[in-house]
Amino acid sequence: EVQLVQSGPEVKKPGESLKISCQVSGYTFSRFWIGWVRQRPGKGLEWMGIVYPGDSETRYNSSFQGHVTISADESTNTAHLQWSTLRASDTGIYYCARHQRGADVLSPFDFWGQGTLVTVSS
Amino acid sequence: QSVLTQPPSVSGAPGQRVTFSCTGSSSNIGAGYDVHWYQQVPGTAPKLLIYDYRHRPSGVPDRFSGSKSDTSASLAITGLQAEDEADYYCQSYDSSLNGYVFGGGTKVTVL
Image (cartoon, rainbow over all chains, first blue to last red; front, side, top):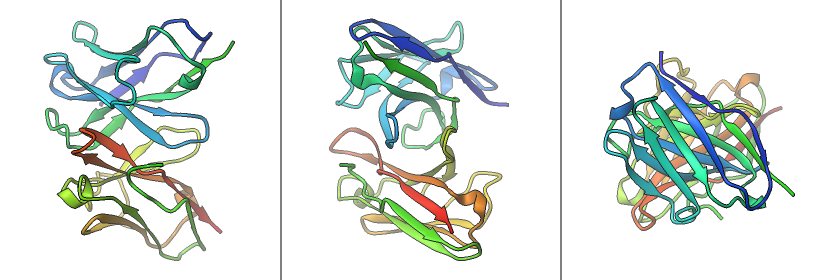
């Protein structure tokens, strides 16, 4: 059974750093692109970027590039999303999701994590 | 403002048919990139509902169907049920942005 299990909620102050995780099971981690999606409170879904664990190739939404880092650790079957300097506007729920057809980045997200709530407030 | 445009809300009585659109442009839907649809019940993660315009993953009822026309896609729900009350998002790839884009979402209300 494919599962994506995300780390727990976080409360941070502006300017702090943060790394959240998405541990997968039930399939070969290295062979499927994994993406991150943000949902601000009461708002829609925003595609942030993706990583291919097999070679660590990453692709970013230009709106997020330079502000977040997406990575993957094959030794723990875990994808990560990290910030070095959080802003209040980063508050939201962050979902990880797997691309359906492995190396095909045009395939949909077929399995999703449960979401990680990140609250950034002074 | 989203690259893919969806109506903010639609509603229908139980048993009725509702349909709503996802309108894009020549750099996404019009360029031939597939459209996928997700259902999000409040407080839960999105769930893949329709992929590649019209295909349903295993377990999705055939009450849900998707279609495409030029630079837009549509999702139809027939035999509307109370459990269909949720937000629905379309998604496609955009060549000018070099990445995926989501529509703004459509809230379906069952009267």
